[in-house]
Length: 227
Length: 284
Image (cartoon, rainbow over all chains, first blue to last red; front, side, top):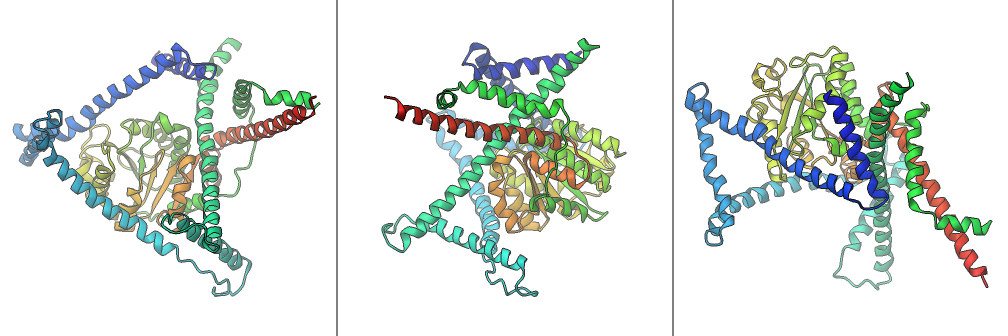
């Protein structure tokens, strides 16, 4: 009984959201607000059920009961830095919260630095691509010529796009201006590709809902009445 | 004729929405065989990585998607799990950071495929559940922690069973036991590339929404990612590679119809605009 009810609720909510295409209406806004409320409520429950209860409270409780490793009791110490965050609510004692936020900023900065080094350095190495089609073991072939051409386009796009972001040089130079315009053109091509993908994703959302409405909700009803 | 065409320019866009919607339902009503096309390098890379998995290693799937990105992520998970089952590769599923509903959606997609293939939960695959990591800092710490000692970050699986009691997890402790990481979500975090591929050298592949694909191609080109499944098109190509057309193929067909509708609408709209301008210029 639960599943058909869930399907009907899903279908009604989907149609309510689609009704916005005709015009903004109360039904649509009601569903939107309900979705926001439900999401926040579920997040609170899930945080307790899947994180705080099993990963924090349970080890402490078991440590005190003697049914698990006594080291689990150390999780109690997490209360001290955790509670410091709440001092942000007081103007007078705000500085106390900076003790823990400073710690977090330090950790975040360290990890971000490591992240960027590990992410960007291989990118710089990979930017050095062979341009000579004769350099391969088989000499000049269709594949090597195609690869060289592709690498040349990559190099031009890379250099001109980087040049476009030099804002401290004169842009009316006869040499630099065409290169910067090429860079802008390359960026426009990339943005065009991104926009094409954006359309694809939005369409995928619509298709998934249409599939649900037709196959999960409408088709069983039609089949039932047909038989 | 020009007058009639000019009226197209003033067509209410709602008719266009309706026509596009109806056109996209067609592949669900009538089965139309359409080729998935040649697999891209991004799709082939993931397929090859799974094909080369040795028997003593497992694949780590991070399935961090829910209803919000189900439209493309569901097919991307299904086709890869089907391939893993066919090759008898065991796998561990996590849902790191993004959505607490990740484990449930993963379970719903994986369980029927795994059971059909004769996979036994705990022996051949495990769903370790949700790990909260709301910021990129905590995500980096969790990824690092899982890679160094899986059991310390996830002491129990999604059903509450102690992870050490599961036969598969007794063999999976650190990143050394993992052959490949496949992260599926709306936009997989770059921390997977830096903290897994960068630190440990373990291959990483992504399944992402089409909208995010351009930002990952650079990592594919540099070898930091071994493969990327891009939207339903990627899933359809993968299904063609494993010879089992499924959800990705069907959704991809509907998408082709939608694309055709948009191209047609753009042509008709521009024709209408041209006709309207022509009619205006000829008016006395």
